[in-house]
Every structure is written in structure tokens, then in C-alpha cells.
Image 1 (cartoon, rainbow, N blue to C red):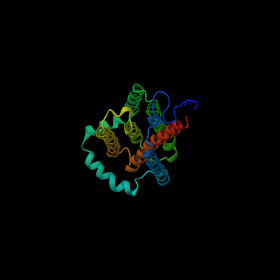
Image 2 (image 1 turned 120 degrees about the vertical axis):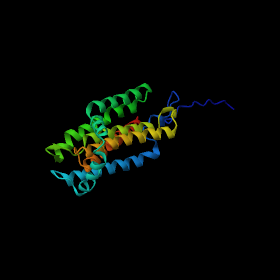
Image 3 (image 1 turned 180 degrees about the horizontal axis):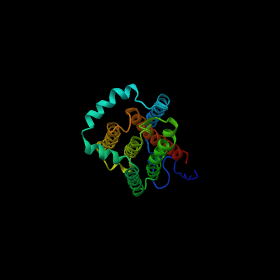
Image 4 (image 1 turned 90 degrees about the vertical axis):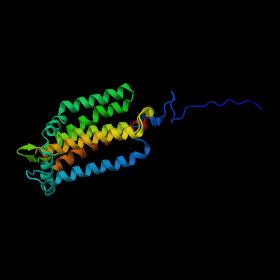
Length: 231
């Protein structure tokens, strides 16, 4: 019989160069649905609080019940309050964003670099230029909803968590990656609560800021993954 030659072609799941299609994803397939659900929760919390507290100048019942306890417990830690006030401002957040971007570029994780470079600034712009003027909730005349400190810090923490979920090569163990993500979340929570203790925000401002920061990062990650799958 005549000899037949079979020519194999690289499958879409394994493009030339040996790099798998999955390797370009920020979120592995099993985590995409939970990420979408968490994004929906963040949007719902932000919208609900915005409706409830629009135009308010006084704390809600939840704020009135919880904020004094935070102020009593954290108010004496002056160093913590001062550090937290600085940590969530523009320059530190920008430097941390730049550091994450450079780290992704150094490892040629292009989608991660885009996420780090875009998500946190986008969350801050949404908070400062859209939501604060729109909701118009104030403390002593200053717009407070959502908390800009909470937005920036939780956007950074969520970005770190996404980048640590499935890094290229998995050179760092899962336990270490979980620890690093937890530390980032702890820092974001500490800064947010410290701003409540400083009487700069209500607790619900901080919760809304956390929702905005986390939600924008998840939306960016899911969008980048969708674009990578399309390509």
C-alpha cells in the first residue's frame, strides 16, 4: 500500500513555542465563576450603599454601632493611624502599582502587567471622580463615599491575589503564595479601618471602597482573560 504522510498541526491549546493557552490566563477556569460571583457582590454592595447613603452627612445605624468601638480600640495607636493615612495616598499606591507592573514585565507576564498598571488607577478614578461626587456623602464637608484609601489598598491586594493564583512556573509554593495574598489583604483591611478610627470615614465608606477596588480588579482580570481566549 502507498505510504501516507501525516502532517500534524499545533492545536489551539498548545501554540508554537510550547507555551500552553492556559498559561496566558490570569484566573484558572475553576476560579472564573467564583470571581464573577464576587464581582457581582461587589457591584451590588456599592450600588446599594450608594442609594442608601446618597447625600447623607450622618452615620448609618451600622456606622453608629461599630465606628465608636473601632475608634476606641485603634484611636490610641497613633503610629498605626499615621502610617495608614500615608499608605493609602496617591504616591505610595502609585509606587506599589509600578512595582507590581515591573515585576510582571520582568517575568514577561504581559496580561499581569496590564492588570497591575490599569486596575488600581481605574478603581481610584471611579471612586474619586465618579462615585464621590455622585453620592455626595460627607463628613465635615469632605466627600467620603467610597473611601479612597480602601479603594486603592484593596485594588492592590486583589491584584496581588490574582497574580499569585497561577504564576508562571509556580516557583513559589502554594502556602507561600497564600501567605503573601493574606498579608496584602490584612494591610488593606488595617489601612481601611484606621481611616475609620481617624474619623475620616464611616465603616460603610470603607466597605464600599473595598468593594470598588476588588470589583474593578476582578472585572479587569476577567476581561483580559476573555480577550486572551478570543485571540
